[in-house]
Amino acid sequence: MARTALVTGGSRGIGAAISKALKAEGYNVAATYAGNDEAAANFTAETGIATYKWNVADYDESKAGIEKVEAEVGPIDIVVANAGITKDAPFHKMTPEQWHQVIDTNLTGVFNTVHPVWPGMRERKFGRVIVISSINGQKGQFAQVNYAATKAGDLGIVKSLAQEGARAGITANAICPGYIATEMVMAVPEKVRDSIVAQIPAGRLGEPEEIARCVAFLASDDSQFINGSTISANGAQFFS
Ligand code: NDP
Image (cartoon, rainbow, N blue to C red; front, side, top):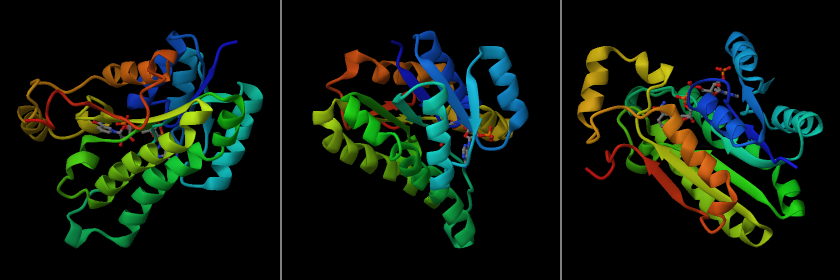
């Protein structure tokens, strides 16, 4: 029987590419989103992938949503915690609200997404937890104290989950994308984007599909011994 994958924030950007790649690999896929109904409806019409709306920052909503997905699509074997936001500001201007919104969505959102599926994975002795972190969690970033804290936190989450899940056939890994050509990055003024690209040794932005292929590999049986790892996909930026 085909395995089931849940992709949070799976109807747009990197998440949409992940959802499509997993469907192409033969998984049953459910994609979630926060509020952009139109994008989600278009995505479902285009791909046939079911979309579900809930706020990953809310534990009860996440748990109820996951129960619905498991009833309608199947027990979740692969969970991709991809939903994320930015609320950038230099630290001296960052408000407690900007701090909490990003922590609640990007970090607590990972707990809220993985915690409800974890017992089923333990019972079935198989699971794949894949968290989409960021290069900025590895190296920090100006005006992203909140975001970098969450993305660094993701690495601690997967390293810890890896140790807890290893004997139950569950792996937990993170992917740290560099700058990827999504709406978020393409909305940046061209001049700023050019200066970003100038810092990438590969000389270009990454494509969402390049992250999706990393996810497809981590979801597969071939990756069983890769556990607690971080895959950096950034055109050599981090190492320059
Ligand atoms: P997008 O802004 O294109 O898409 C974000 C997705 O997450 C949307 O589907 C959105 O739903 C959903 N989402 C946002 N907040 C919530 C919430 N509270 N509850 C449920 N869903 C939510 O993001 P990207 O594709 O650019 O980024 C995806 C991930 O990759 C993020 O974690 C990001 O931090 C990370 N990343 C991105 C990089 C890039 O260059 N783009 C680089 C490194 C990491 P809706 O459609 O309803 O708004």
